[in-house]
Image (cartoon, rainbow, N blue to C red; front, side, top):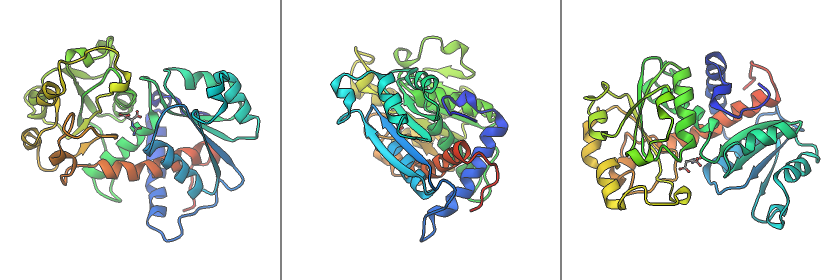
Length: 318
Ligand code: NCD
């Protein structure tokens, strides 16, 4: 694996190997001294052209726990705001002797372009509405743990995952559909027609506009997990739904809808959450919510990805 740009870069064996490596990396999180030596002397740059809380800080923690030197460069406060081109910025940063570039950019395809210009490993930390492969990996990791157990990750083969919300603008949905299919899971995406992407017919999943029918299992059979997605107002140029109350009524995970699900069915959300819009506080704070597990998984999975890209070995000494 030279870069990680898309969930499609991961075949089943590689995806499972990354998830297994992440399981071993997770042990570090519970230690008093959270430091392993494998990336000593390596430099990782987080190059973020878009806001981020979880993704950037977890890549930073992941790199540091593996003993890499991690530098954060954000568009605000960099020469990007002076008009420097994307290529010049990428080449400038990597000219300093960087081993891995972790990039987030508001334009779909920007991270692929950067990977074509630079010599180091590139990780896509979210490009526009295109892909966010490490989010899909951490979601799969969380699902394997929630549906199996700590130390006994479940096989996702044949599991049914509903992904609900603003699919059109969601790189998380795209990467998850790809990775979950690679891992053998069945995916149903649920959205109002205006937030269902064009071309969705070619995606390897079922689609529905009826959230109650999907959650109750009437549409495509029982669901094993639900992933709620944020309504991405910052990417919307027009009226995709009449108002927020209508969206919450038709597509929000309300307490009533939570009751349609089995007691053990986990609820995921990549964050940041719009409480009261796509997810109620009852659902977000319930025992079924895996939101903080996802954040925790983010560090282990990103450690595994950086380790595999930079150290290259399959065997981890933890
Ligand atoms: C997601 C993203 O940025 O794509 N968040 C994240 O990485 N945790 C989803 C979102 O912004 O809604």
